[in-house]
Length: 330
Image (cartoon, rainbow, N blue to C red):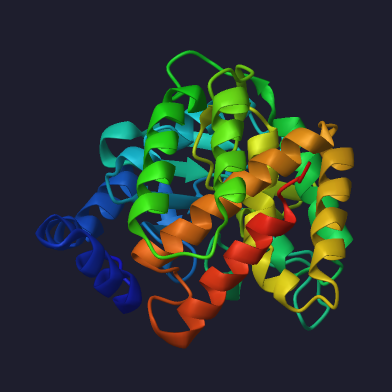
């Protein structure tokens, strides 16, 4: 039986309540049953992300892998569908799936070398102590270039049955207008209306392409089969430029350290659009929409890195600035 990480158990109960506690009680048995069915044995300590545990394993006669079991949640439903459609193109391979259990057996990403220089060592996914994510690369242009190239590779014709981002457009607009009316904020009407215009002009008619949906440098890992591979997709069908917005939003903390935030923001847009072979204007507009969403989300719910207090105030004010920097004024 596996030991469920205490931090993961606590956060799951805090977020999900009694259903989360009930799932945690069943989780060791679920993992054992899957290990037996898929012919695997544990090969390292149990790790975790936000909503699931990751168990490094060895497959009998078939090398290494990771077993990922997630809390049943609508946001996790189409992750295996995306992996199956990509077939290892720019993302980790899907070996096995159990949709009822929200479980997958996936290709294990690796670091290039261990710290002793003795060659490659196996690492699991998600837990930053055991991975080599793109987020650890110091060169900002390299981070954005790799993410753009991954985005381009993942943008293939979407299979039927995946959620279409265009179907969220009405909800996006309704929520933005509600937030703008109900919440105290520093966004000008022009900035908010620019985000609404993006929903109306880009959000309701989108390409029918498979996109990651949560593309950022923590969701791209070093690998052996390819230099970098994506993990943790949402599996949406829509505009690849949308992923440029999620990436830029995730770079906010690095932008805080920039001497010239405006220049840094537009550098990210330039580099990503070129690497992803996308129209820069579309990437900018989606990024502006994401920034406005984040500014309101932070005020209503807080951020993962700051739920309250002066740090939250600072981050929401920066989200306001980012939205302003991304708004093209006539």
